[in-house]
Amino acid sequence: MKLSELCDNCKPLIFESTLQQMNLEQARINMVESQVRTWEVLDQTVLDLLMQVRREEFVPQPYRSLAFADMEIPLGHGETMLTPKLEARMLQELGVRKTDKALLVGTGSGYVTALLAKLAGQVVAVELHEDFTAAAQRRLAGHGIEAQLITGDAAAGWPALAPYDVILLTGSVPMLPEAFRQQLAVGGRLLAVIGELPVMTATLVTRVSDRAFNSIGLFETAIAPLHGIRQPERFVF
Image 1 (cartoon, helix red, strand yellow):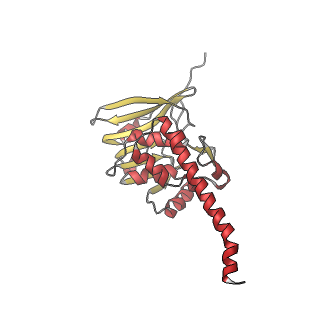
Image 2 (cartoon, rainbow, N blue to C red; image 1 turned 90 degrees about the horizontal axis):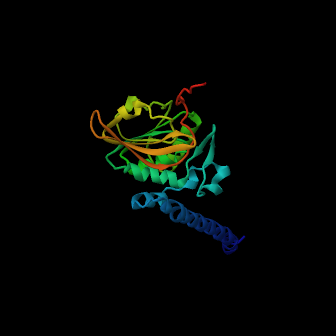
Image 3 (cartoon, rainbow, N blue to C red; image 1 turned 60 degrees about the horizontal axis):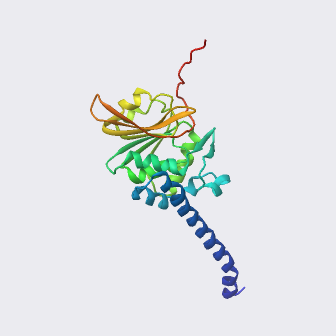
């Protein structure tokens, strides 16, 4: 086969690949403009980050066509990725800075870890499932992103590496364990979804001094419980 014939045969493949990439980029733009912005995420740094970090590459292969959908995506072990708008809103509310040391409770696919690592100076991500940690490590390495990934139970935080300037919980808690507050540095911020169905509130906790904390309820939402959290006892009459 002549080189010219080979190139002619390649043209349809090149065109198809280009078209697929264009469709992906349009889907990413639609996600940011139609889902994320309309959920009061207006921080340009966060919006730019969603365009830069390829979410589809952190989604399990069977669900990649849903990478930009307004839905939670199954990961296995009964876990899911949060919706794009919730991931973005959480990061915006935390106001992450390059000088921050961040703790992420629940590494999951590694996508939120990647976003945090682009914003913070240091990220510690703790995951209960070893296969999640290994897969996230591969994905982050493929993007040249560095974070400290640990397999372990962080239902009460990760005191060994405290204090943290930022703490983000990717699962809900009925009540916030005091251990998380105590692992915040003064000036540090924590975001957790607190409560039980049907009422859960995304709450921002700021440590204003050694003994004082400020808590603000931001918005109502509902996500799966954080594994390992002890549920409150209920009275039976």
